[in-house]
Image 1 (cartoon, rainbow, N blue to C red):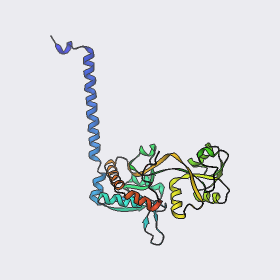
Image 2: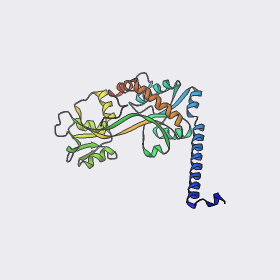
Image 3: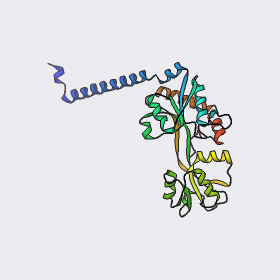
Image 4: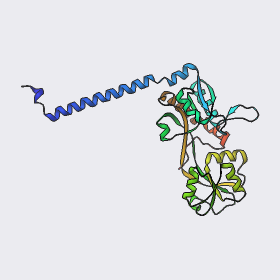
Length: 277
């Protein structure tokens, strides 16, 4: 009797499916291993002894040239230097305009970009990211003597200084506020201090930078948003080995207090940790 032919049809079909799944799994594992084997992003940097970092150099307080000395500095710049030190390599900064930073990654001009690159689903589809090293939420800023605005629920009918194209401007509109259009933070502060508007919603990093430079100057934060943005080191798509090494370096810098120290220098607060819920 031919036992192979006598096997139930369902059992034969199941066996074929299992075999196909096994083959697919083997192929997927092989593809994954091949991709990992061809990712030389970390060893390339290690062999060169230098990591080439793209940054603007004109984006205070993240990446700019210090008054007087002209030296390149800023939160992102100093984080990049600390990361390079952890990797055991030198850092070489290449300055260019924002629009050219991410395309420079794709063209191989940089190994990484340290320039407050926000993590978005669209960017994650093209680039590889480290773990975040900057978190920021929105803040509702008003004058220190204003007792009428204590939360976002108090904005209906109030006049706020906002950029018409910003998400914060839309948030103010959704809350029922009247909008006085401005070009940016500096104009918002001016209108607040002149009493021409009652508040403004802006990024917390902008507020912290202002306080570090000018003090609170008659202003205060009345409320903060629950949602927040994340910025990380951007690398070319597929450069996972280097991204992982940078993430490990950032973890070490967080644990030993270096990130908090750098953050405190430029913001007076630790922006490298996720905001408390």
